[in-house]
Length: 209
Image 1 (tube, one colour):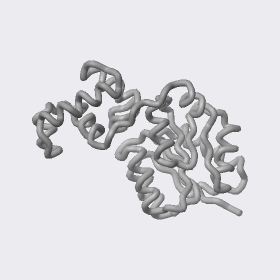
Image 2 (cartoon, rainbow, N blue to C red; image 1 turned 90 degrees about the vertical axis):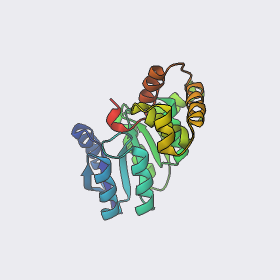
Image 3 (tube, rainbow, N blue to C red; image 1 turned 30 degrees about the horizontal axis):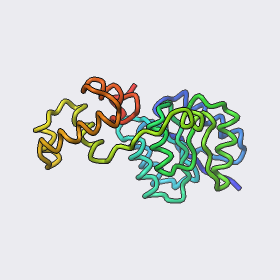
Image 4 (cartoon, one colour; image 1 turned 60 degrees about the horizontal axis):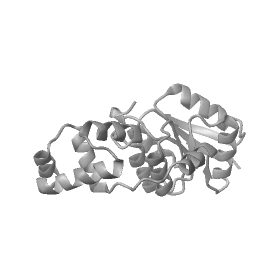
């Protein structure tokens, strides 16, 4: 049985490496490649692939947004996230989202090949490096959608009044969300909050390294 795959990553060398790994399976055709989130969504909608290899951080659309749209337009597509982020927070978020596979970019090609094979066969696969990271550190308290919205606006330089106007909440409520963010992320200043959020992959991809 043959399978069809799309590779989405904004680095050509990563796409090439993943293509080589898929080629070793012998029964996977790469029908398209994408280097940004919006293009990935369009290609998934067009091709309805069996497998999407998705980078967690690409331009134009957050990885989680791409994942959601892929599920919407092609619910039978298996999605394996291949990420360079190693924060337990982001990895835990992807696990909770229900992806079919989760790999670090540092994973051995042999493990990726076996993981992709299992996913295409209908299973799920969490790479050893991911399992090790999650086991080594306690799970952080999850941020709410509203807290993520406030965090993004703080990162954009908005003050409490402006944030409240954009989200239709009071400045006092914004301040409560800001305090909750700092408590959950274990920081005590806005600069530390943004550094931590950047490292955790909580901000838009164009702000990430």
